[in-house]
Image 1 (cartoon, rainbow, N blue to C red):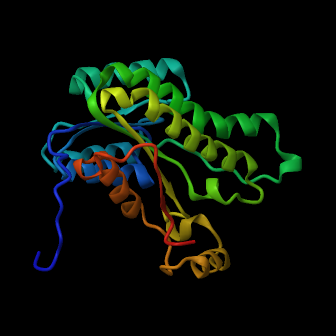
Image 2: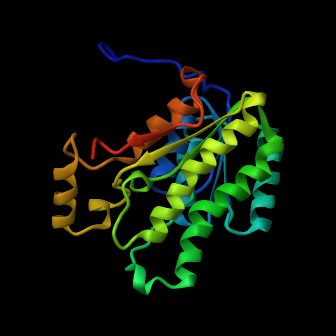
Length: 251
């Protein structure tokens, strides 16, 4: 389009795995990669209408893509997902660790089971999947972890959530040093409140308060996060690694 700046990120033909790709940020990311010409495998916890509709949408984009059922908190499901990816793509150029859950509990009432649920989904899945796909990652490939901007500022009633997302910053910084000799880059994206459902699932007054704190005056959209992921996965960020990129509109 006239007046539109287009930068080729070099993603055409790239082999991509996105965890938790059937809804929200994951879905927007999967579709963005597919539109850029990449070949994508993604997963959701179950065969669902969200997974089926994503499969239909991907077929319209013409590349070979796959949506599989996998609970990546389970090592056996991770192993099956890696084998599905190997069969479908042969190897990987991009891994996006997107699976995650939220939690709102005052610290004094935070139960061990709830702590473990959030940490297992938000942190342990990143360890399990990344370690399992490491042999599939080509030299010069990219790993992008989806964190949260609350990791940098904290959130009341969300100590376990904040901790799980803050851990990804350390994971990203440390792993980039181990895999750097292979040219593999490891980065994170830290979104602010994102509208994966109407009003981000919050009461109107809460949305209004958060928007009022945001320099750009609106809630983050899944496509905003997907754009940052594609940048970190693509050629124009080829000398960026170990970085956490805030996508929070200036909170």
